[in-house]
Amino acid sequence: MATIIPRKNKQGDIISYQIHVFRGRSSDGHKLKPYIKTWKVPQGLSEKKIQKELNKFVVQFEIECGKGNVSIDNPTFEQYARYVIELKERNGAKHRTIYRYKSLLERVIDVNCNGIGHLKLQDIRAEHLNRLYITLSKDGQNQITGKGLSEKTILEHHRFISTVLSQAVKEQIIPYNTAQRATPPKLPKHEAECFEIDEVQKIIQAVQTKSLKWQALIYLFIATGARRGEILGLQWESVDFENNSLYLCNNLLYSPEKGIYSTTLKTGENRHVSIPQDVTNVLKLLQQQQSRVKRAINKEWKDTGYVFTQKDGKPMHPDSMTSFFRRLEKEFNLPHINPHKFRHTQASVLINKGVDIVSVSKRLGHSKTSTTSDIYAHLLKNSDEKVSNVIDDTFSF
Image (cartoon, rainbow, N blue to C red; front, side, top):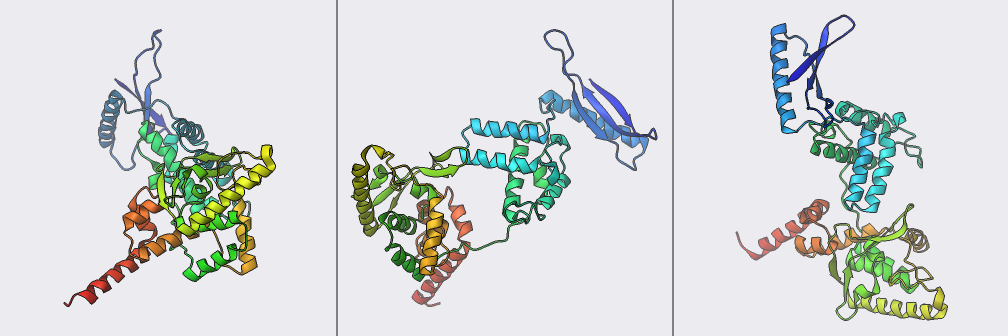
């Protein structure tokens, strides 16, 4: 049975009703905290219509309570977000994801950013989220540049908020995900940036003047299209010299909390990737060189089994290649180099050569072919036009 309590304003007018539904008693006979929900009186309705709508609301609320679809808790966003992060961590979310969630939460709860940390979950509205996003876009939010956060970073905050609220919907604390009603910034569409073939040749020629480690590293980026962490996570036991193949199963990452660490691949699916014989030959030379260094420094060598290491055998720092790329660019007047650009270049070459999208997707390690299609839609369009031209040249219509 529900108890209906009217709430009045200073003028004595009823502006809402608070509905309490009895939950029963505890084992010691005390009343349990009731289910509580507020119904605001719509403006412009007659008293008869108000009572009719109120009764409908109360009946529906009692039904939902009976089904167990109503939560008695109403935590703040900060309280619940920290719980969700713990839940994700316990269920095996990757360290990098958890670290990023914690970082995003700091701005989301910051009152100086119009943060929502103090708001109860059931009180959060789309307007609150939109105000947060607007504030994050203003000058001073990016501590490095002094400008506002980028659309991409603001969208990351939005997606984190949506993740938290989705869990609250799942646990029936709130009826819907408010983030779905907000208006986050839209990312401008950019075509994947690729190297031209002659640029790749210039990079190959430039790196041939450097050590075997850097040669092998860049050759693998060019030859495999693999992600940075996948290449740096490669171990000798995963190199098949006889069949010119690599088994990608480790992802080497860095975070201030953990330092350099190894985890599973981004999609969680390991894969074999073939490489050219010339690249295999360079890897053989690198392995021989590494063995000589190991013998020379003996006990100082840390035998981690990684292909790319520091001078003492410890795995190579994922960020160390950035400074090398900058020096190489400057010395040889090369275009800007980053590992993902090699990845896009590989996809571009394969698609333009007519390799089917499923094969391209598997080689790149995408979990879905739709991911590949979305990223390289402009290339697929060009490839389809080439196919159409072949049909036109072959048949007479």
